[in-house]
Image (tube, rainbow, N blue to C red; front, side, top):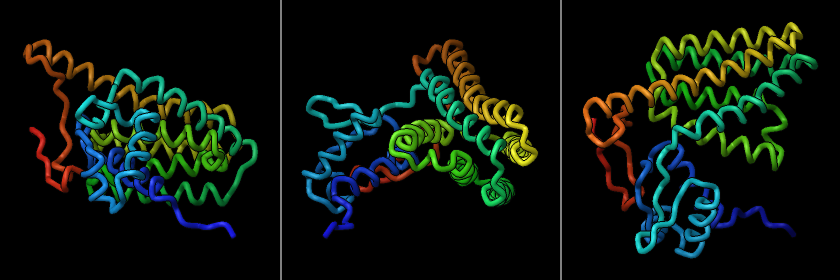
Length: 250
């Protein structure tokens, strides 16, 4: 009889990856298997397997005699990451326009209304999380296929981390919601060309904003001659290192 028990290594992998994506573990943090084992409640063997898997996926990098370090966010990678995401989502929008699905449209509208509520509450982290759900629903069955779903999940999580670090303003969130409305309408009307173009431009606008902010940060760095790229920092978050709270400079 097949067991439904999730292997400890996979459970540890999911916990660590979730903490990295949410910035609970900050970029640049060092992870030792013994510390992680204590926090996830597993022995060091499955934790080592989880850390090795995360390294292969590009979340961690191995540092001799220091364990693993959470990779910094490479904003230079984001245009390529977003282009791949945009291609998958544009294809999904085209499919929905050619074969309209009232149930999917209803779910998309409900999620978009949740984004409006999140906007009113002024919580950009929650806004980004719900926005990811919106796009996963848009992707449809492809999000659950082993290959396309796995690739999409890795890509969307990489972008998610960058968006948390440089969250959108209220005005940008409002524009985002309106673009969703136009996308849903184009798919309901069966306009596959408009749906594809709206989906792609919507996704690429996000990375264009992030790229613009990083360029501004580099220009500020050159002006100040500090030797570091100055970007807005996330709020204090919990580190996996023995559960200590880590504070970043504001």
